[in-house]
Each structure stands twice: as structure tokens, then as C-alpha cells.
Amino acid sequence: MNDKFSHLRQNYTLNSLDEKEVSASPFEQFHRWFDQAASHATIEPNAFVLSTVSKKGKPSSRTMLLKGVEDNGFVFFTNYESAKSTDMKENPQVSMLFLWLPLQRQIRIEGLVSKISNLASDEYFHSRPKESQVGAWVSPQSQIIPSREFLDERWKHFSEKFHDAPVIPRPEHWGGWRVDPTSIEFWQGRESRLHDRLKYSLDDNEWIIQRISP
Image 1 (cartoon, rainbow, N blue to C red):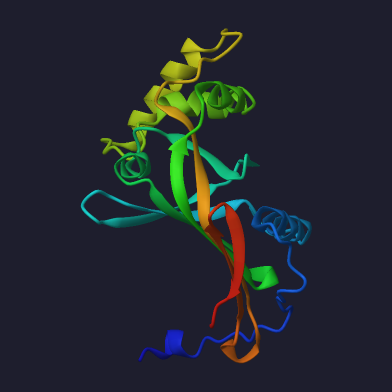
Image 2 (spheres, helix red, strand yellow):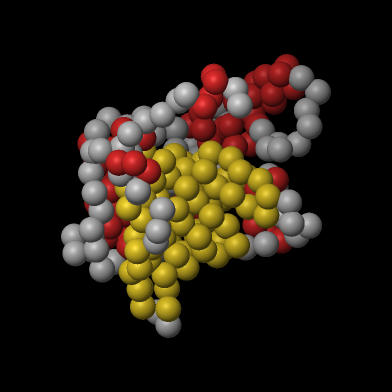
């Protein structure tokens, strides 16, 4: 065993997680924890790891940014032609993982993903900084490109194209996805690795809370 890794240990003693104290709604509980993470100056508290599985059963993970919790679904935006979007079109079952180390907490979400409406994608797209809107046109996400200069040239092209445009149109290949959860697990680090894990599972449109052994 490599000592560079095996000696690393952190004992978790900040908080506990009790069934009597959590909300009956996992979404309300999510907002509680998210607000606490944001107030503790956690860097990018809306960052999460999105895991997808292709139709051939190949898993893949990447870090994304949550942009909303609407209609009991978690919303994020990306290129519809990216590798992640290809996976989600083939297999809508995904997982999301939020990790907030300063609070010794994580939230794990499993559910089904679907595209949001074009209107909702348009609304969010036009709320972004102009540079980000141009960037959505520039990058053929997940595709092999010949060089960094390729992106620089495309940036110059689209920057000039939309320089005087009063409104930059949202590209058809870019928009939002929403994850409708079937389970949400709240994890609180505890001493001696005996962590608290409370799992909300959707059963006949009702959320059931169960304690999971660490």
C-alpha cells in the first residue's frame, strides 16, 4: 500500500443528521443544506458530479453546475451534442453528487433526466453574460479539435458575427436538462467512519425516509 495515500485520514465531528430534525420534503432539506453550504463560502456550492451511462453500459462522470430546482426537478444546461447528452438520450437514468467538504456533507441524487422546454432554455440562455452566450456557439463540445487555435478562431468569428446583434439567438444544440429524482440521500460525516445516511425514496408519489448503514 502506498503511504502517500493510506496515511491520509480526516475525522468528521462537525454535525449529526437525525430523522427527527430533517424536513419531510427532500427538496426543502436540499435547500437547507445548500443555503448553509453557500453561507459557509463554499467554492461553487452548486457544483455537482453528473454520472451517465451509455447504451453500451459505459459509465462516465463530469462536474456540472446546478442552475435551478424547479417543479421538484434539478436543472442544468449543456450542449445537446456533447458526450453526456448523447448518454442521456440513450439512457435517461443518471446520478448527481454534491460534495461540501467544509461541512463534511454530501448529497447523492438518482433519477430520470429529460429536456426542459425551449422557452425555458431561451430564458436562461439570454440571462447569461454575452461572452457565455457566444461561447455556446464556439465550442463543439466533446468533439476532437485540431488545436487551441481552432477555438480562438471560432471565438473571433462568432464574436464578430454577434458584435452588433441586439439579441444573440440560442443555438439549437444548447439547452437545459431536468433530473426528476427517484431517491435523494443526505450524508453527514461522523466520527469513527460511522456516518449518518438518510435516504428519501419515492414510493407511489410519497417520499419515504430511511436510515442507511454506513
